[in-house]
Image (cartoon, rainbow, N blue to C red; front, side):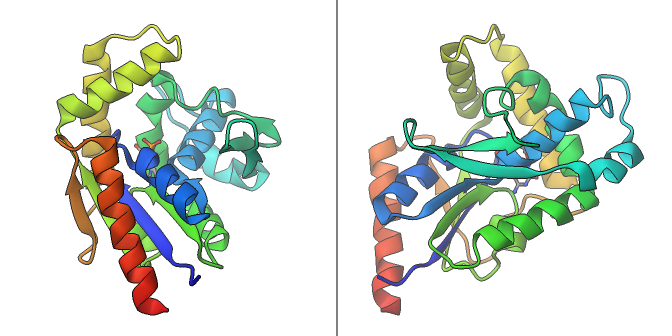
Length: 231
Ligand code: DC
């Protein structure tokens, strides 16, 4: 079967990764969580002391980028790709609120974006990839055959993220999560380099009132239509 590229963009916690994983599973494609790469760079910046609550040594981080390697390794047991930072599995550390609070500042640095975009383009060079993020349909794969742009209300999204963090044992307050979701959306949409915008040819999906199954059925049908049309 012909392989296509599927780009999924949208605001934080809109369920991009859920739909991306479902699609990748159904089509036998590789799923790449590009946000995990920005989160891994942020964790590195925190560990090395380049960023803290009251300071950000942008130059220091930029100069240190050549010492940084990020890659995904497939975990057969869990059925997901886990992100490694300099050979250490950091999957369990990159989704906490501290990283979430700082990641938008790190993702706004052009040098970081150039490095990660190159790597993402390499991962998708043979197609058969579903990648989610903020600039996938606009910058990473502008020629993707299927582009989705996910939205839903900030409250719905904060509730989803809150439920996930509580389920994984984090002690967090709903108001802090809502504040983080709103502030990240603002920084991600207003940054100079590759801001989060809907690609002209992306299909917008507001999933505030869709079940996961309804959404998946709709999107899988779109993907098959495109694949069958190409063949
Ligand atoms: O998808 P996520 O919430 O894990 O992404 C974390 C942050 O990384 C998000 O606030 C913006 C940034 N990001 C980006 O700028 N470009 C991408 N392609 C993916 C994520």
